[in-house]
Structure formats: structure tokens, C-alpha cells
Length: 305
Image (cartoon, rainbow, N blue to C red; front, side):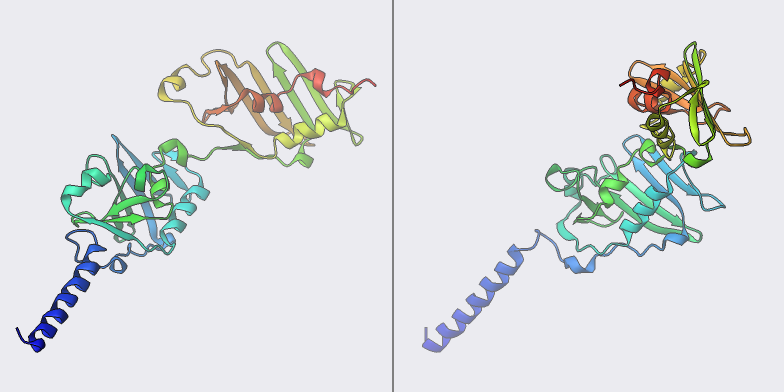
């Protein structure tokens, strides 16, 4: 072989080695650059429904005519919906991890183990994507995603996966009530058979006819600024809640004696169910929070020095 031929052969071998090195950095069998993959742009105001199906149930968020949201018929927290829609707009550089249907089950994006996320607008589907239940290396952060009908699977680093995995109760509005402290002029509390009234008079709070501890009264009012639930009863628990007379009750009134808020409490083995006295949604509260809303009258009396 002549020197010239050896030189040509060396160039060819070098080119082949360089090509092999580049291909070794890509997942086996892939032919699509990572930068090519983008989720469709979703304009928040155009979204009508968000549906997540899989794991034996379906979560459906729906926008009402007044722009309020429900989740499977329950009131949804608008902040949670806004957080989800905001996540869809975040810039993400996905990493291509596989391009074969054989990898779907292993990565959790097949029809059995994955979640199918659909976002629909007024004029049709805006987004349709499979999302894994776990992220890379089994973490709860991130996810593997793929478009239905596509063999490419990508690692997605935003909170899209975490938010998609929310259950119905995670989307529900947990705000029970919100009362402006300065609007309250009377509070009636019942704890079992024991009842008392806290009344605002002449810039002071009275417990019955005696002065109340002003700091304790202020803490009680602060507890009603925003009352958020810890959760909700299951269907089985819902059937047994409030089947007897409420163990506790609290009512707040304004200066004109109009009710601002009335709540009933039903004790459980590890907390309380609570609802407005007129009925409606039943929430779960811890014993500690319930005690802040319905304290014993002894805690409202002035401390003796």
C-alpha cells in the first residue's frame, strides 16, 4: 500500500471514529435532536378543561362561565390551576432518553402505568401528552413525557410531572372562610353543653359580663382571618359525618347582629369535620386548629398575677 493510500485510509478511519463518538452520546436508535421537541403553546385564557386520566381514575378540571374552576364537580383552588398553566409556559430543554416503544413501560409512559394529560380549549385540543408517575431515577421531581403516537421519550425537568400527578383533593379549594377581625362584634361558642359569648363593647371585649383577656380575644379573631382545611373526608367518612349533633359550634356577628360566619364541628378519632351551619362542603381540620377557633372559655379570662 502506497503512502498516499495509507494517508487516505487514516483520514477515513479518523472520520469513522469521530462519527462513532458522536453517535455514542445519543440514545440508541434516535434520529431526532433534543432541541426539536417542544410542547404546544397553551394560552391560559383559552383553556376550558384539563383532564388527567390513568391509575384507575380521572381528574377533570373545568372552567365555569364566571372563570371559576371545578375539579370533578368540587370547587377548585384557582391558585393551583394558575400554577399548573404557568408551568406549561416555562422554558424547558428536554433530554431525549429513548426512541422505542419497548421503553414505554420501563419509563412509565405507556397506557398502563402513565398519565395522559389533555388540555382542551374552546376550539379543540391544545395539548395531549403522556406523563410518567415518577421522574428520572425514581424521583418525584420531573417526569418522562412523550406525545401519543410518537416513539420518542424525553426527560422533562419542570414541575409538570409533579402537578399532573395531583389527586382530586389536591386540586380542591381548601379555604373554609375569611373574616375581617374589625368587623366582628360578637362571638358565640359552644363546646358540648358549655356555651359562652364574647362581646365587643366600649373598645373592650367582655366574656359574659366580665372583662376578657384582650390578647386572647385578639388571637381568636386572628384565627378567623383565613381558615383553611387540612383535607376532605373520603366517601365512607362523608356518610358518617354529622350523623349526630355537632360537638362544637361558633358564630361570628357584626355590629348589626348579622351573622358573618357560623360553623359546626363534628369530632373524629384524630380531628374534626367542619362545615358551615347552613350546610355545604365538609372539610377536615386538626384538633389544634379547631381549638383555636373554639377555645375553652377559661383561656379567654384575664390571667391572675
